[in-house]
Length: 131
Image (cartoon, rainbow, N blue to C red; front, side):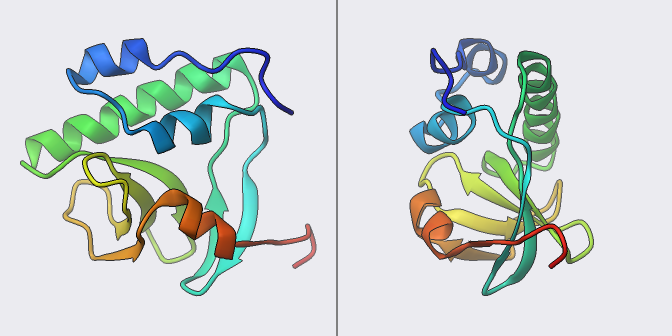
């Protein structure tokens, strides 16, 4: 369901002392939705979404934790958008370039998966509950 007002990322930007990539703001800030099970060339994944204001606050806290781990490891900022079925790997948006990368928490990206979030979402196939 579309949100009446776009989510506010000002607190996250202040906490991280950086602007958040517009793709992340649109992805998490435009709709209320439960997570979506899907399939891509890389395999199965879960597109992370938020379904309430409380869930959004929890997401922001998790994004801050992820960002601080990246900072401690002296790695560029990425912000996760999906979990994969490959262990701890996730898909994240590189905050500087907007590219979607495959990475493990606290580690450098393994590889670029898509030039941007729209490119990834256009080739993802949502799965039915029994798939």
